[in-house]
Image (cartoon, rainbow, N blue to C red; front, side):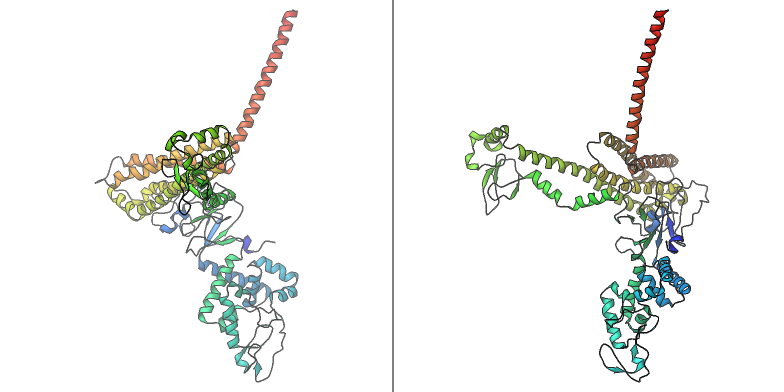
Length: 560
């Protein structure tokens, strides 16, 4: 059974569907409410010009399938859940919080288990209905840890009733808190007792520093124990994401402007799947490419077997000390056996003869394969990294535009900033498209070579999208400068507006096609091939039928 909170929509959150290419995109501000433009200008679907810059990229996407939670939102959700469990089960809020932590903050799960078997849940979680040690009327009680006698006011216990002095309690609680988040499942110090230690004991006996640590663990447990929530993985970010599954799109954007994949927590990589991204990232960091480079660009010394790179034109190689072996780069034979009769310093007759006899075929084949593999990987990696660099530069340029250039352009062209949103839209489109284009190179690297039709279709779509993006990027980066540097209003500015808006729209369409095609696994190629096959078959059948018809007609004609 789903928990009650699973069936409730997050409220007062920054929520929505992370789909940049959605047709029903609505503009949203920090509170998640859409506002229509009042100035009569087209709504380009991006944040208002006075929005906080940290949320610019996060807010421009249409958002329906996730919510961004601040710390105060998490605390409110925690308090609401504790209050609901406390009221329904008629238990204290401390007991309710112990139950919720045990059942991973699922209110529905708590209710199901409690009403199915309350006694079992109490014993398992450690919420005892009756104390194990009955209350004592003695004027002095012995601490179960230090065994010193104390007056009752210096003794504390949880639901089990085991007596321990406040000093020992403080040390016990402090030690477990400093050991980590396990302190949230703290039990009675008595080894045979499973009674839970609640928040009230920590507030009563722990130091202020330990209280802060405990409260931080308590807060984080609400996110980390919940399968629907995750912390934003950006360094230093303390926002959390509440994700609603079902849309098929896992890319989410935090208010810190970092976009990531909910499924694998890597940076946002739509339309490439998580498996491809994982393989690509592993390949970028793996030693395999180093070994490929060594294999493709070096040869082992014939004596000590250390790999040697040829960095000069001559074939006369000398290994590094202490080996100092001198040999021929081509045939790996001793250099003392070489000279003018073997081809001199820049050739080797022995190698050519041995190669013709097939002695170097396997070695050369392996080296050639490694070289080709390295060149292919380098081709895709350089373009992947180049688009990442361009995207970061575009983000910097967008920030510069917002903080300085937009106001300057507004003054020089005598145009309100609200009517310059088409420039922001262009930059945001560039940033998003650079991200998509970057990951298409990882997709292309793992696209099987034997699927020639799919590769041709992919490269066509990628080329069209990249060409459109480059035109857009150049327009907004270079053409805009003439209006920023102009002395006054330019009559060409409206033409620039039309051109830039048009390029933005065209580029968006190119990338829509690319994204849809890759998300469908380039299935259009298979469907077109099937249609082509059916068409060919149909034509063949039609021709055969017509031929048979002609034959019959001839026969009838002859008979008459």
